[in-house]
Length: 358
Ligand SMILES: NC(=O)c1ccc[n+]([C@@H]2O[C@H](COP(=O)([O-])OP(=O)(O)OC[C@H]3O[C@@H](n4cnc5c(N)ncnc54)[C@H](OP(=O)(O)O)[C@@H]3O)[C@@H](O)[C@H]2O)c1
Image (cartoon, rainbow, N blue to C red; front, side):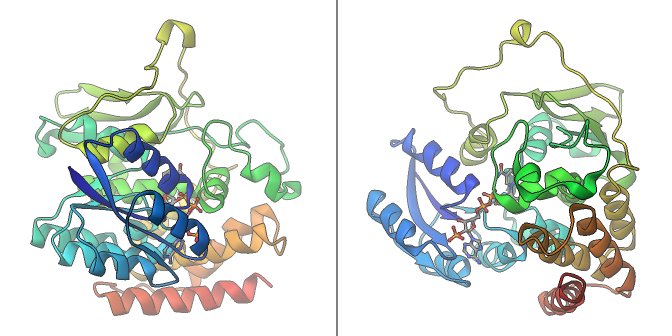
């Protein structure tokens, strides 16, 4: 019986995770749930699962300190995932990590602390779960390239002018039902840029050995290419319960009451290179990642502010990437090898972004 602490329990990932737990009552128990603002919903979940619940800005880290969990699922949004992730690592508890912004802003810090403590970080993001699954039984040193697949989001084919895009249009993802921040990040493809950085830290692969392929069917979740030229892929229906359940059961697998893929019914799977002139976020992330340190923190922080500004109707869709680029450009490059340095760079970038999102 594995006791799982679910941070971000009312969100899209949290809800899917609780579904996985409900469907395996003999294997999983909820050690606790944490949310930010929906306290009433957290209380309802606490009573359903006979588990303590926590609400508020610091609820997630508090929940890690005050519960006994065998695994912590970090599925809050943005840098709010950093404190609970570090707390879990400090307590020696394995982390199932959905909150990719944690690795974008503080990947070096988090992965080195996890290594020192021997704490596994198990990816929940479908692309990284795919690579993680392809690596089982392989030597990590044999991995030579990673190809992250991307649906391309709602604006892969049009409209030609993205300045008239509304929040409703941008939130309508063609294959995944997700929370608002990650949906907008998918529409700008900032999300895929974040995933390049996430893959770099999780699998120790250089940034220039991580490719992106547009794959609108969202069935091949990513591919790992090895030194001998073999490429392995993981395929599954586009349902986050698949990677979430794997993160909960790794290195084992449990049955799931879900139909597996029917390849003949799908007919064909397609792949193409991303159009970086239409989606400049990809290049922006690669440049910030090459500079590292404060620039990556600034990238993640400015994106949170810009996405919130777009959803509130304060800036246009193409301004999201412009605001982020502007803040990143103005951020001087420095190391960020302590929590204090990350938080200081985060606060400075948020202030700078706020001035551009009025
Ligand atoms: N959705 C997906 O399919 C998907 C796929 C891959 C990766 N991810 C990543 O997973 C993370 C979660 O995404 P999501 O789509 O599930 O987001 P979401 O639907 O917006 O849900 C966010 C959850 O986090 C909680 N939360 C936010 N700030 C918190 C804080 N400071 N302390 C405690 N709880 C807090 C929210 O609580 P309230 O409800 O009270 O506000 C809510 O339960 C993101 O980093 C995203 O990039 C998501």
